[in-house]
Length: 372
Image 1: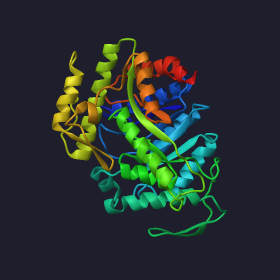
Image 2: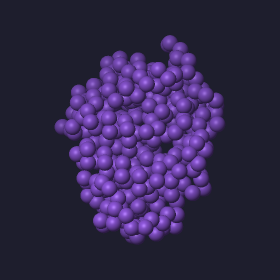
Image 3: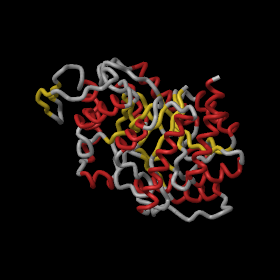
Image 4: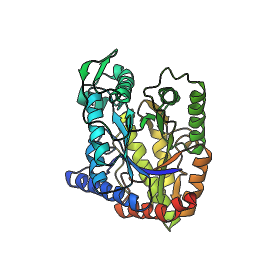
């Protein structure tokens, strides 16, 4: 069982000064995560998504973290692979450079970055994003197999060139895909890549996604593999705030989740801007339910309804509470088939001291429980 953290660089107060502080805070959390026994950190790539994600250059963030650590793996969770965001050869070059300088600690995930806000900024054709992600994965899976790489695909034609440097991990860093729908889970299995899945709908939903992934693995023929190396690893999101005070942890966690839901709904579903007001003593579970009645969160290419049944679709019962509460929730995710618990701690309204205490509690109590 692996334990990781994911960073969006969210912020309820998106001023220039606060933005700078949040990015520094994320580095501090990532470095502390190594000290507390986490296996990996993930950093997203998004563009122009104010409030929701200010992590527009994750390769810089990951390099900065790698330079300050020795053991923890650094993961792109994910690179926006459509060509208007990143040419696949440039992705390969940057990945190899970081892989070498980190001592072979890089993991590389692929995604679409499918909001109109992002694609319109970078001139991406939304109708081509799915095909471009697949072709990019195939290029990265083959780019260092020979001294000179050439590619004659449906979308790109590349004459023979050396692609330098070559990655330390051979034939390339482990490959993953962001999977928010059954269709993309099946594709990840057929491509032979790991799956990064959302866990906001709880362990039952994670179990359903694991079943889809495993069934696709069992049925695949290998003709769609993007590489000679197969990675059948499923990482499940785990929203978490852990403190000695259970009630305070739940209140802060639910407030962070509400901000997360509202900021997703703004960019993916056209809802209003996130509610930035933090009301002391508010019933956050009720506030989350009230937000759910008004908005539909659209994450990546899928609709995640946050109306209807809150507890079933976008519920508030996650690893919020004491370390014992987190242990019980992790046990449910393991039973659901997760290979990796991907902690979401850095949500836009969560104070830095609470993030650091949560990391400490996971490292001192939760992770050792499962390592035993």
